[in-house]
Length: 193
Figure 1 (tube, rainbow, N blue to C red):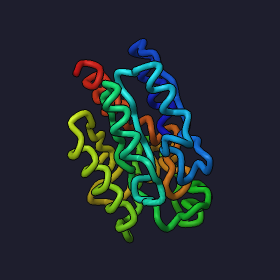
Figure 2 (cartoon, one colour):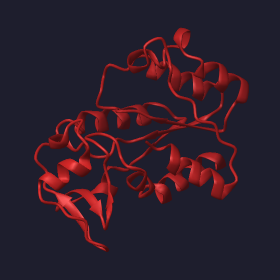
Figure 3 (cartoon, rainbow, N blue to C red):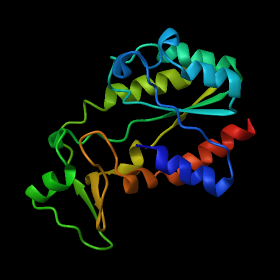
């Protein structure tokens, strides 16, 4: 979900970049287990100055995350942990475009539209988890993004004619690009440390 936004930054700043999926034996729960993932090999060989880790932090099924963070930090990498954006709970796995249309939302050029908060408890445990990890490790920094998509009016769902989420927990390319200035600042700061 963040790859296009990060690739845009890398291109604009002329930063060599590689995107590595957390493919393990079972990608959804073993992607960071050292004996099951090739990501460790690449970090060890390339010694990147910055490693960006973005997961659905609210899901605790992920194993090996701390082991990977310690490994990357031990290789001298600055680790950036991207906070979860808001979870569009009522949408579920359905297409957000269709779901929003069924709720009467219509794109209006130049207008941001928001869905009232119904229940944000699914996002909060993940936000607490990633903050705790960033606080725990000296080599890790949090990249907060949640606030970019929320106001007192609720969760941003449309920005003019562009949809923000593609489903309940994935941003569209446009949605991810809203965070480019913040991601860019974090990456450049990580390269300076």
